[in-house]
Image (cartoon, rainbow, N blue to C red):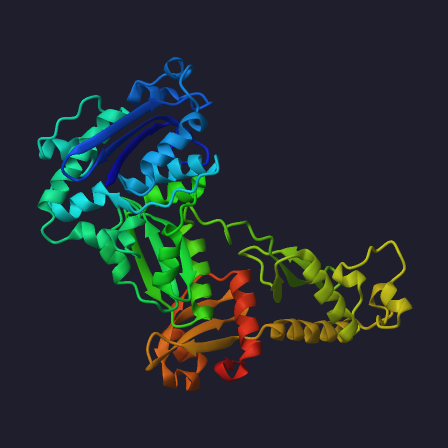
Length: 456
């Protein structure tokens, strides 16, 4: 038995919206056996545009039962039947969520008449319920009302059963069928072509715009996990509603996929990505010669026109590093803006400053010590290339990090570990670096030095 369902709601997702009308048509696939419909008091205002679309107003539902009063009847009508709807995951998510609020766990097999129609009635101009019914000469009484749409969907479903020469319905009902949970606009072929290898994936909308970028150790499995649960969150429902296409890039290994994901999020700025989109308060150590000819160091916010000798995500990280460098090289904390000029020099008290702040140290000698400190800062993060497994056995992935935030990525032949830096760079694609990538690559290099090459 099949339960053909249609609902009208106050909004687009189950967690914030509510049902204003529900209709259920019970059929054996040939004959309609029973019908049920009810207005529902949503306990929230009906938006004006919804009222204009459905004709259901606040006044119409003010004396209607709330969902809790009809929940048991709805559950008994739906249980042990196949749940059928036009865009089934929308209706199912609302009803399952509402039932769960009253202690009832709906676990039904699902059929989507949109996806079935695309398979069985191919090459039609549109698969919206109204246009589909016009193409198949199915009359809809009271369009955008629950019973009118549910009854028309039941007649559509009868035609789908009659014309299903390739057993698409049986395939869709099989356990594990992707058609039961995939977004309504998504072609199953996009998912079937996706490998279970490390990589990044892109969700695109109807215009081809990327709305989400993700990474995965196993691409196909991770993408399926986005759709295989019945999350009612607004963000999840909005994302699923907008997805029309999926594409991907294989990356070979986890380091490369994390780097590529970060690059693409920063490049595309997708609507549904949250992580790595926050502004990075990045700082750096810069140097300059003051009016007295003294070479000074200081921590500044990193900008395009300022050359820095070392960078870090937070100012406190730079303070720690610079304090260490000052002591290692016998520099003056006042000349590095680590101490106020008005108080006694801590460096003199602790006997690592030789008195440049009191004009008792030769400026040239002091500047040489600063230059040595700059050299240390520059080699804190040397130019290096980290290699990893590629997309096949004949190549490596490669991420090259250089000074002043230079970054290049790509896939190279196995012999590339012996190449000079210049040749390696020519075979890689430049990309925008960020602190997440730098931290990731330096950590990987430290843990796997055999797959890392440092350059002068």
